Length: 126
Image 1 (cartoon, one colour):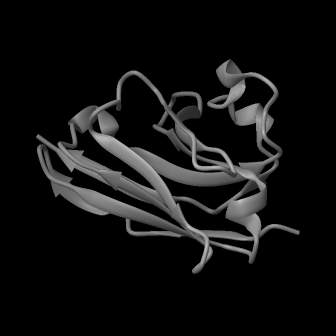
Image 2: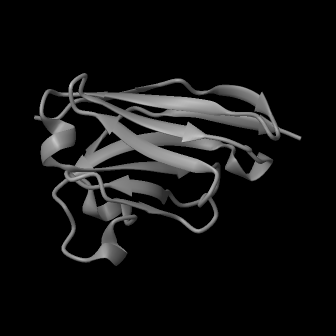
Image 3: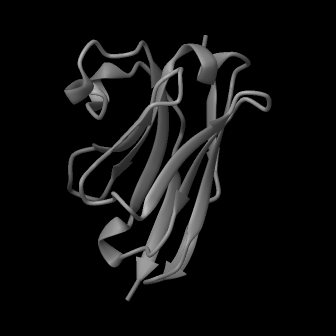
């Protein structure tokens, strides 16, 4: 069973930065597809970034160039560096793990992941 625990959320002003962390069960990040997802009040959960077991990444268009997903397999930790934050980035952020989707277009689909953390809140003020 995969366990995921997020941390690092908080409140920042627009233009600021945050780094989210996701502590995972041993071996998770080297054997599973992992992703960061977010859900704002009244909106559907959306995928923002994903990384495969080999380190290949994919980003949603609205975060490209601002956010970076990475992992440290030695410490079983998934990271999410978020720079130049905008008010529209405000949401609960979740890390997730699952089998690597067969198609690249599926990497950011929440339904492709079956293990989820409890989430960490990110609030960006203007």
